[in-house]
Amino acid sequence: MTAIASTATVSQRQPVREITKKAARLAEEAENFAQKRQHSKGKYTARERLDLLFDQGTFEELGRFRGGNIGKGNPGAAVITGFGKIYGRTVAVYAQDFSIKGGTLGVEEGQKICHLLSMAIDMGVPVVSLIDSGGARIQEGVAALTQYGKIFRITCDASGYIPQISLILGPCAGGAVYCPALTDLIVMTKENSNMFVTGPDVVKTATGETVSFDELGGGQVHSSVSGVAHYLAENEADALDYARVVLSYLPSNAHEKAPTYAYAEGHADEVARRHIGEIVPDNERVPYDMLDVIRCLTDYGEFVQVHELFAPSALVGFACMGGRPVGIVANQPNHMAGILDVDSSEKVARFVRLCDAFNVPIVTLVDVPGYKPGTEQEHAGIIRRGAKVIYAYGNAQVPMVTIILRKAFGGAYIVMGSKSIGADFNYAWPTSQIAVLGAEGAVNIIHRKDLQKAKEAGKDVTAVRSQLVSEYERTTLNANLSLEIGELDAMIDPEDTRNVILHSLHLLDSKKPRRRASKHHGNQPL
Image (cartoon, rainbow, N blue to C red; front, side, top):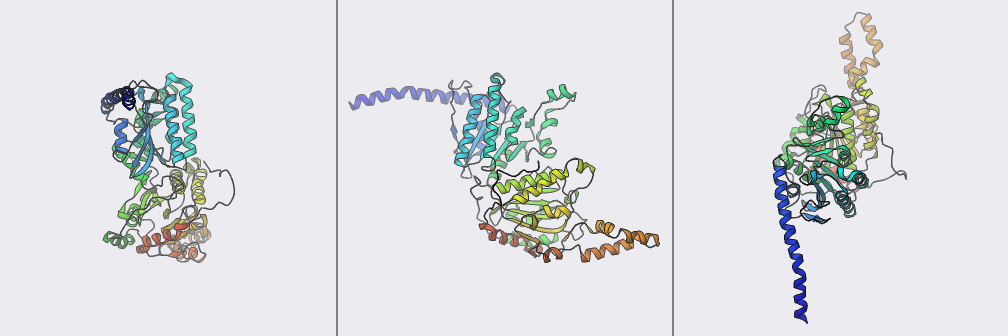
């Protein structure tokens, strides 16, 4: 009886083995075909991208042969879904395969992506999407479009709970652009990567304007002009590596803290500590590179910028301090004196919200002359868009430490992580200036009549103005008043800045979020 049963079992297994061998053979043929098509365009295949994204040998695919017709472009084959490890932590991925039906999204592809996103939410793990697609599959009509709506909804459900990163590694057009637009970070490449709602042909028909793919929605445009992309990668390998690096600073979900890393202070930290006070000039009109300051404060001098090419008067990005991930927000005096405008306001606000969503402490380095004046900015919505910074800081619940390096004037002082808007610890360097206006602007308003009288009396108006400016700087334009009324916790020596931040973050390690009112959500200025 046993022998007969055993023989029957073997005979039943034989067809399964044959199907498995056939599937493997056809899958290999499909990958070889994909390589020829993608490599000729200077692009990797979907599976090669997954090999670069994940720790070696950790990717587990979901539903590879869903829909039947193994190896023949079966329904759902235009997207690969599954899970892998990045630095030992589980991450979900969906990768569109342009070699199969142009990577277009049909019903089966949409269902695979929705299933993956739902699993990622249930598991509490990040999602990385590798976009390379011709958009909705025209042959499937509204049924394909419906899948985008479902993806949008689940992406919104995941927003703020699990990190979501989109890599645009080929075309992304039409309604499909809103899949990555809803995620936390978008990475584009210098070549082959483009995003637009309407393509060049439609633009020409509608407006008569002739424009190339890159001019309309290439990586350079979206990284430096529109601000849609958060990083412009040299190539696909660089894009995938950036995604890996950013995820190393973030927790898997909003219920966890960001991972910490071992770090031992060394000689380089002592050199940086002594050097930081030499970077910032005393004269507020002399520019300097805030990146030099940041590198003196962070572990190994590393700083992973976000939106590096967009709105350069502000800097935002991730770093570690004492092995603890932090988000750094800073003004950049090297560009327009570090002023806040409509673009830099949105850049700062978006990053602060990202850090707050995923429990990453925020360190703000301030050297700001104010909001950018002028009709151009007013008409571009500086009131509405500048208010986004207020909303972001005012609602943030993570530990926040602010350092005023040189100057902080007017409304920009308030919004850049001031104590009144919600920062936990605020410090200033001894030579810092805090006021409603800079000295010359204030004197022109406060002493307008005095200057007019001096002019009428034939006095040297320039000398009188200089004297009044000096008096204003001595009595008003210093941080003493902020210190006296408790808006600053201490004046600190520049050399102590890193240690003060580390000590403050350690004290705030047990900080708990608090909500003042029960509500669905706030109504953020958009």
